Structures are given as structure tokens and as C-alpha cells.
Image (cartoon, rainbow, N blue to C red; front, side, top):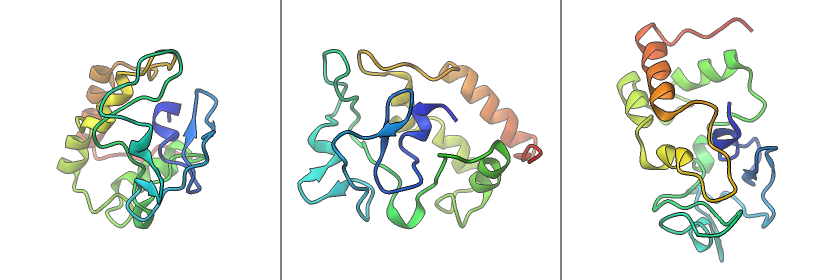
Length: 146
């Protein structure tokens, strides 16, 4: 539920940015594949790696939002709703528990822990996140009370 995650999993089709999760200043749109529309492709600004300089765009070779047909919305979700969504194959890209576990090491997910200059890191280290993720999945992916 960190802004590092929520910003790329918005309710709408415009990504969020910053620790306050404000609307992305360039107003890019998600597009069918999650990689933007027309001349406003994510990769136009989000390069293969972080751009140097304060508050410059973070980078990753696969920078994108979830695709339009599987938005994986985190913004505004309670812990209960997010947990239920994450394990629902109809809402999580048809991922099994094993695939969800592997997703914690996806290059784009890992890039959240390599923020560009001026951007904050998630509240947990990646190893702490991964340990909590493994524990959650191995204990049945329990959805906390509403």
C-alpha cells in the first residue's frame, strides 16, 4: 500500500506520482497494453534505468501500468480488499500462488527499491517485503478483517 506500489496501480487510467500519489503531471493514459498511448508512451520518459538528477523519472526496461483489461487497482483499497483481489485469478492476471510469489522478484517490482534521486523507498526493504509476502502466501493468503 506504499505510494511506490499505488502510483502504478491507480483507479483511473492516469498513473499517480510522488509520496502523496498525485496525478502524473504529464497526464499520460494507460493504453490497452499499459504502456501509454500514441506519442505519450511510458518509455518516452521512463528510460531503461533511472534518469540522473533530482526528481527525474525512474526507469526500468519494462516500465508500464497493468494493462487495461487487468488494472490491478491498489489505490483506495483496504488491506482486506487488496488481499482478496491479489489471490483472485480473475483479477490478478491469472496468477497462481507460485506466480504471485515470483512476482515479488519481477524487475519492475524490484525497481521500486531503486528509486531515482529525490524519490523515496518503500517502508520495508525488499527482503522484508519478500519475507512478509512468502509468509502471507504460505499461510493461505489470509485477507485481514474488513
